Length: 155
Image 1: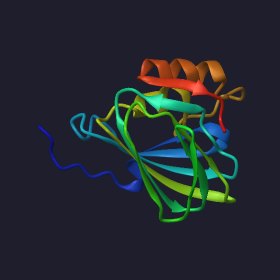
Image 2 (image 1 turned 30 degrees about the vertical axis):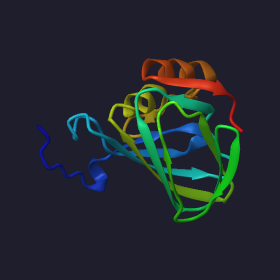
Image 3 (image 1 turned 120 degrees about the vertical axis):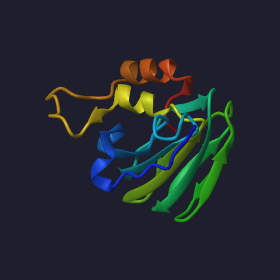
Image 4 (image 1 turned 135 degrees about the horizontal axis):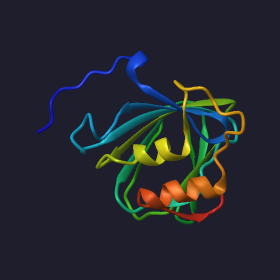
């Protein structure tokens, strides 16, 4: 049974993610009884995950600040500030940030995808290993462990 959950900003886990960006885990599956994951990305121009498919969850992205190109299947579109997109599971997709910086809200349901980010990313509350990087192999292993399928390079 779910209960109300409150996490102030200083209680939210912050992970170093692709290209030096940050992902704040706002709500995880533990806090929501498995119902959803909510995260907020703070990223720079050029940040782009590999073209991928979610096999376990549906995903919603809202671009709070910035601009991006979005690929859904073979279709390319622009996502502008305030734009929102719903990405059902099993639909290949990817994006690339085109503004200097971007603030991106992600909601995934059911929850659990945060495990992938935690496995491949670096928790900023701990000292950063000098050789830390999210290699293609580390990202692929984390994606595989959490039901993501990488189907191509970033676009």
